[in-house]
Image (tube, rainbow, N blue to C red; front, side):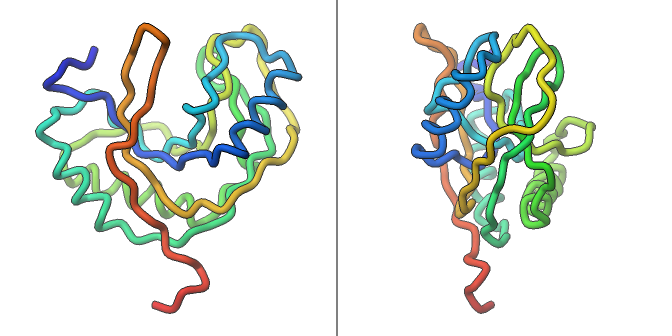
Length: 178
C-alpha cells in the first residue's frame, strides 16, 4: 500500500478521450463481465514501477525526459485475457517504436535500480478486472497516433482507483528531421 512517502507509479501511453469512449462502448456491448476499468483510466502500460519513494520523482522525470522515441500509430485489435481475469485489448502486431520505447524505459529504470517484471513485455490495455471468462480472439479495431507518454500515479479512493499525470513527454514526429 502506498503511503505519503511512497507512490504507486507507472509509465504508460494515454488513451485519447474519443478512443476511450469508443472502446468502453464496445466493451460494454460485449459483456466481458468483471469490474470494468473507468473510461478516464484507460491506458497502455509501458513500465509498471509499483511503490516508489516520493523522493524519486525528480529522478524519474529526468529519466523520462532523456527518452527519445518516434511517435507511432497504435492499433488495438485483439481481445485477450491475461493473469487472473484481466480482459484486455492488444495489438495483433506491436509497432517497433512501441517496443523500442518500452525497452528504453526498462533499460533506464534498471540503471536507476528499479526492477521491473521479469516477464517479456506484453502491450495491452486492461478493459476489465476479474472477468469470469477467458476472452480470446479478434476485436473491433481501435487506432490512434501515440504522440506522448506519461508518468502516472495510481491512488485508491472512495470512488475507486484514480490515475493522475505526474509528467508527460512528447514522442518525436516520425516525419520530423533529426
